[in-house]
Length: 322
Image: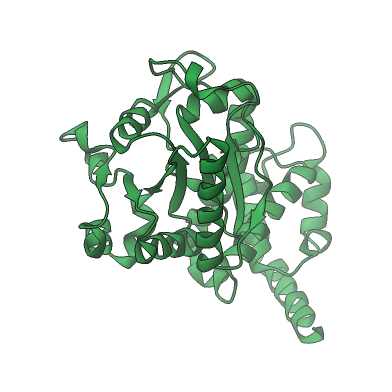
């Protein structure tokens, strides 16, 4: 199956128009077979806007909705389970609302294909567990757009086939409104697709890459706990790109420990660019390049108050010079 080029959406309306174009093209490619459009909502991402039930209440008569964790019974994660929604192509109000939640909160991903709502529900419930490299099973949070956006560039053809089943594509977006689409491998044929669900698994290399990329939302959550004012005046894209760049820079500086990378990323939000070359950080980072030196975190704790005052004066001078 041919790949779908990366797409950058201008806003929610632009994303909605692009989705309709893709579904229309998929129908042509499938020799006029109807391709249905679906959406998966990562419900915790919408908590600041209200409960997902209240948000979707205006659309319940227009679209079937199911909680993909609804069969977990008394488990606490059931109430926050992802919602699968059948999106009628003529329900533009619903589509625009979903695209707005996708663009503004990265809370929605989209799927389309010939799958029925019932078959897709069963497929996605089967996908809730992923086989890790050591053979154990783990909860697969495919509703998290950070996860699927990263996976989109890591998957091999056979993995994409298992993930999609009879779907045509899985669409996900990042905070900079860059869209990635997961499609089947070039040799996939719908009429030869396995009739029984296949177990989705990832390799050690993929797991490592995924863990590295997921540091961004993890550090963002930590920043929100420590001091949310550090993010004021920054767009979601600026925050996302800034944290991603910070993680890359931390690695270049020799930081490997997750706690050290988190602390460096927070300091990068607090201090101007180039603080690494100022005392006492210049000497700290020089030491970090030597094997078996104390952690970055422990060395920062030894910075004296007068050294912090010196950094503050330097930072103030940088701000005035701008």
